[in-house]
Image (tube, rainbow, N blue to C red; front, side, top):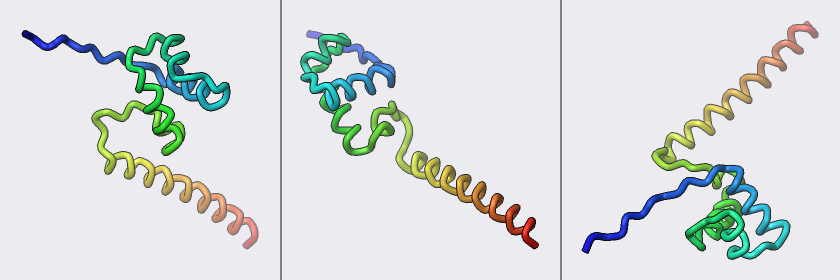
Length: 98
């Protein structure tokens, strides 16, 4: 017999955030959330809540196909860009004073 074909359903970030918010703030059960949004996998919401508690909103993003090294490089680049903006502002202030 052939295995039953399984389709992976994608859920938007808004649905994920709202599901986590309902569980965290409004104390909805996982079953209530899965029924409201038609989520087939009962443990899916539980995994979203776990990732949210561990990584924040970043944990809810769909990062399939991206390696951690790329993600870490992106964060490092963003940090450097913030530092550059601050240093440029400091340089402008220093030039005005001199």
